[in-house]
Length: 261
Ligand SMILES: [Zn+2]
Image (cartoon, rainbow, N blue to C red):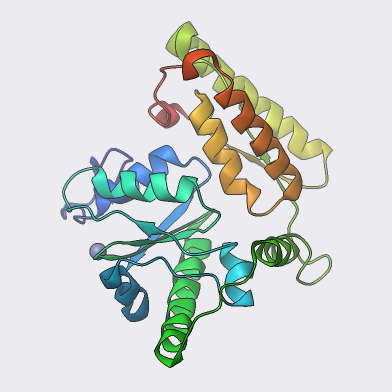
């Protein structure tokens, strides 16, 4: 069966999984995410049972997650609260996996394969670090080493020429001019992205139009894991956000109009 981002059945006749609301919430609120994976894998779940984030004490973990794998709040199944816990926790971390307290792992990625990889890597480091904990003290890596390892792995590591050069085409528009204007912005930005794709030697990936600063910030945060330059922009955006008078933000709900695209 298949359902839309608001858990409405669009294909098949079976009932959606009880986790659907959590996954849908993540897709609606993290525009860069194209895959969400949930597991109750043994070692990661052991950390969830202890309500502990996994400390970053291995280079492979710094490479992949850029820091500890954070702990998200406990939430009961049934409404948006698990999804909200995932988004709130991952928005402030580079990690693409989160240990949800007393529950298990949720991981995200730009596509399903990347999200599966994050879930598998999460279980792997959960196991190593758990075993280390049984043997004695776990020694976390210093922050600057974690940063250096993460940047090298995400930007330099790998076979030269083997990486696909991909450029995300993000457009921002305020909602206050109404649905029709937004629809025009979507059409025009798709046309520009298409033209650009013919002009540059890289894959241009058009992304749904972002309608508030939170959405822009989250999209850039998602991409920041793979590009140092973008991270600088994200920091600049964060500053812009914080300097808004009274912290006021556009009220147009992020993700709600994504279905237009
Ligand atoms: Zn579960």
